View (tube, helix red, strand yellow):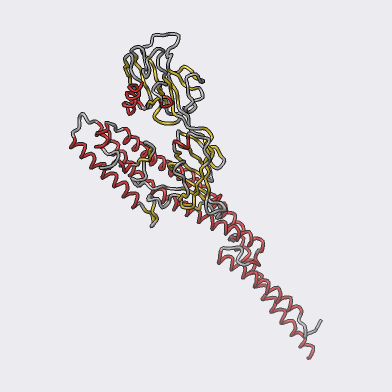
Amino acid sequence: MARINSNVSSLVAQFNLGRANDNLQVRLQRLATGLRINRGGDDPAGLIISERIGTDLAGVEQAVKNGERANSVIATTEASLNEVNDLLNSIKALVVESANTGANSKEERDANQLQIDSAIRSITRISNTATFGGLNLLDGSLDYITSGISTTAISKAQIFGASFIGTTQLQVEVDVLTSAQKGSLYLHPDQGATSGAAFVSTVTLQITGNRGVQEFDFTSGTALSAVVTAINSRTSLTGVTAEYINGNANSGVVFHSEFYGSNSFVSVQRVNNNSTTQPNPTIKAIDSNAPVDSTFSFSGSLIDAIRDEGKDVQALVNGSLANGDGLTISTNSPVLSSEILLTETFATDPTLASSTFDIIGGGSMFQLGPDVNALQQENIGVASVAASKLGGVLKNGSLQFLSSLQKGGLNDIESSVQRNDFSTASDILEEAIDEITILRGRLGAFQRNVLDTNKRSLQAAVENLSASRSVIRDADFAAETSELTRAQILQSAGTSVLALANQQAQSVLQLLG
């Protein structure tokens, strides 16, 4: 064909050369960026999935950083608590030393009191100054805020964790099912004893409780009032108290363990009784361990016993059965983790109406997952460790704290010497030490079982997501260099062919002669 208006061969050559140039540009771009997908047109479906994986990867990488920062916060908090622990141990040693009044002078005890005061002030100072990046750690800033606590029902409420899912506050309802009890044994006056007297012959009673064992000698005709006074005078040595049954001196005596709960007990044994048929004929226990009321009498459901243990309170918290320990109930769930000390009146009377209070905020929330939702968050509360908040022990119906051990306090060395009773100070210290060690344990468990495991799982997710995204989006340099060589050859060939196609039209000039 000898047409010159349409050079079809040139058009075909131009089209293929353009394709070769486009292919060459794609290969050059991929080799320059290292990515197989640089725009949506490269692979629309691949772009969508790779961007989704990229979004997940960004969230996971930030979650790893969040966990590392949370780990630093917990480590800093735990280091400060360790110092508080050491100070409490030193106070414990000083109190034990001061209790050795037979070998320590008043001047030595005064010097110990100065050290105790200094240590207590240091504990409060640590509470007020422990910080991380401007975040106060131990002054109660990270504790949960409660509202509406009835002091007639709840003596102390410590919230370790609360989840506010779909709400700005969490209501807590406490309903006592079974009353807390002390270990109780009942002594009836011997048959033939005169009014108000306990025994018709000389009796030796061995009284044992959580604090220790003591023996008491009572002569014939000893008044019940003398028995009660003698037992109560050594409560600090035995952990056992005594009182009249029904408040009536002629009804007999009831021996109680000092504390409530299954870990407390009372044992009363008549050691000089030679009877083989009835080892303790006048010492009884109530089989049901029910509380004593005005209708109590020895004609009820009684059994011979020399030992009786208390019972832990059983209660529902928001409809779930809580763990009982004496007057204390505790819960541990993703929604609520708490420890609540009930008052004696509330914990021993299941007929009372339930008590409610609200958790209205506070605590510290750690975002540990790539998605912002409750399932990927952990909540933990850190209460103040100031001396006025540590060691809350229920004594005579009121809470007494570590600050009461300072000079002039209810339980300083001088007042303990005057009462000849260091047991209250020791109980407060034991409770304070327990609170700090338990808090350290909780933070350690959170660090080890939550933060560390979460970090490892997130790092594995980062590796797998990165690998998946790389397969989809990253360029294969071996394949791309091969394609680059092919594109370069096609470009050179296309240029040559186009030149030939353009020269072909000039052959018509020969026809013109």
